[in-house]
Amino acid sequence: MAKHWADFQYEIYLNGMTGAVPRLPTDLTRLEELTEQRLGPGPVGYVAGGAGDGSTARANRAALERRRIVPRMLRNVHERDLSVEVLGRALPAPLALAPVGVLSIMHPDAESAAARAAAAQGVPFVLSSASSTPMEQVAEAMGDAERWFQLYWPKDPEVARSFLGRAKAAGFTVLVVTLDTPLLSWRPRDLDQAYLPFLRGVGTANYFSDPAFRAGLAKPVHEDPDAAVMHFVGMFADPAKTWPDLAFLRENWDGPIVLKGVLHPDDARLAADAGMDGVVVSNHGGRQVAGAIAAADALPRVAQAVGDRLTVLFDSGVRTGDDVFKALALGARAVLLGRPYVYGLGLDGQAGVEHVIRCLLAELDLTLALSGHAGPSTVGPADLVEGTA
Ligand SMILES: Cc1cc2nc3c(=O)[nH]c(=O)nc-3n(C[C@H](O)[C@H](O)[C@H](O)COP(=O)(O)O)c2cc1C
Ligand SMILES: O=C(O)C(=O)c1ccccc1
Image (cartoon, rainbow, N blue to C red; front, side, top):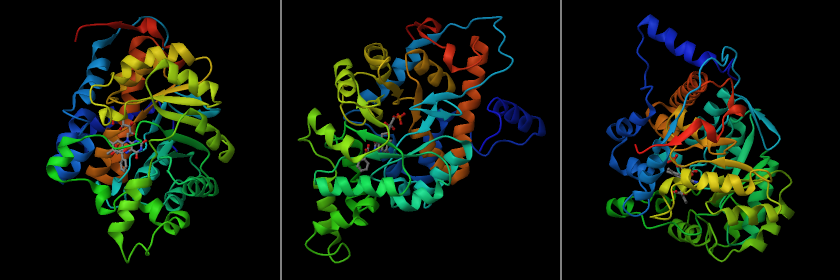
């Protein structure tokens, strides 16, 4: 676990004094291009790509960049503390790693490397249902860190029950249920490169290792892998689900449940009415609904509607420490980091993910301090204006 959060910027400055150039850039917006140079256009196209022409992913960035911080002076920011409480858990910083499937397209150590990096930095790692490594194996890599599991809610209730039972048995305590992907969207960048990793069986580890999933196959996976993949595609999510179905999750999960992919304040109210514990305001990084509202534009409306009833988390477009600051100011309790850690993984495995987390938190710490805040709790709407940039 990391030391004192405010030490991060100090350590980086110190490396600068020794003349040692960091292995990866400290401007995390540069990682995509470097990863593409290293790994090629297929995998990076998949990670970077969005729905349709990519306009939602661009809107996510624009909505964060348009908001500008108005720093305050002379507020004694000498002693700082980034810690926050999220869902009854004390986190060292308002940050977790977002669930990202198919990580083995980035690095052979995939989810285990990302989980170890998160654990080393004390940040929760949300394990995707579509991971390339079975959940039990990733749980081991997590050590005594917080274990959060993301559910793609399978069509077959036996598989859903089996996943929840396995996740519980493997020590996962927080359930993040993704609602925005009952189907995968139209993603021209992947279609045009014929790069759809799950069609080659990547991201199916939890399914292929699941007894309830395998019971639905005519032949064992190794005898007919194509049929197994098609079975996965047809059942990994369920477009027929409606709000009353959430009772199933409550019956089958003991800990906090967070609904990911909420953009409308009325959906957030429905989540609260259904006894959920939190929402992630997210448009899946612009990967699902082309033309959707930017996540940062949805955030204040959702926070206003349910901020007193639910834990409001945020993702989609976070690239820098000041983006985290802005999300806090717009009403998020914490953010999930997506693509930047995926590129860190692709470029330098576990060390690359740790680099990304440390840069982001160093920058957040400095942004807080230089804006007049000793920690996340005092940040609010008054810290921002809407500019034109
Ligand atoms: C390659 C890739 C795979 C993803 N897989 C999942 C997934 O399996 N489950 C999920 O809930 N979200 C998934 N997401 C969405 C992320 O959890 C998160 O919402 C998104 O990356 C945030 O946008 P950003 O990366 O632009 O910040 C995926 C995102 C990417 C880029
Ligand atoms: O690509 C994605 O955004 C995603 O969520 C996903 C869904 C199924 C399998 C792998 C990734």
